[in-house]
Image 1 (cartoon, rainbow, N blue to C red):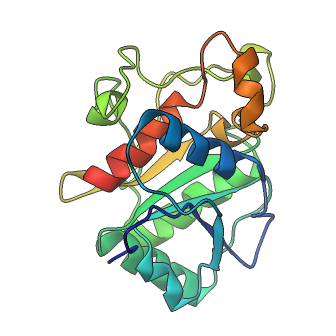
Image 2 (cartoon, rainbow, N blue to C red):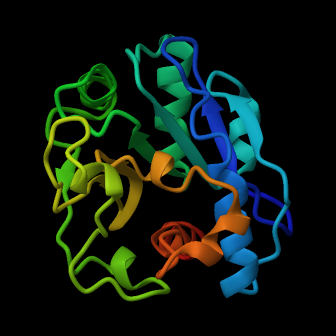
Length: 208
């Protein structure tokens, strides 16, 4: 699997649900890569249908939504082949809700593709929390959690499917996509840049 010389923020579209979320988030994270790292980037997000063979040219992909996720047969086959061939998928629930449609249906899809015990909580000392910036307490909270949005819970863990000792699918109920869905120029108003964990996710994906 090769993405060429530049990192491309790739988003998977899928036939069901609403995949086109958090539209400003990719450019925000790409700006953070420029600001904090030496990773060369393609400045434009690339949207690829999950059922297309074009996905195998890109090592990192994002998938999200609010609604029901029901992959068709080709999408399931491609998702499995993608991660087994070394691809990394960051999946984020825009509802911040463990009982919401996206969360329940996406987890059901992972069970159907990888088995009932594949998606597991990862420890808060996992390498992904130290892949660039240090997050000694595990995944940083989002404003949606702290403000009582969605299921009114603060999720103190992330889940993942690991293949050969590396995270292949990182799964979040924390709604990072919406947390980072703002024009990157507005980061100057934040006391602490909340996109730093996004940098960790991408750097882990590129180096694991």
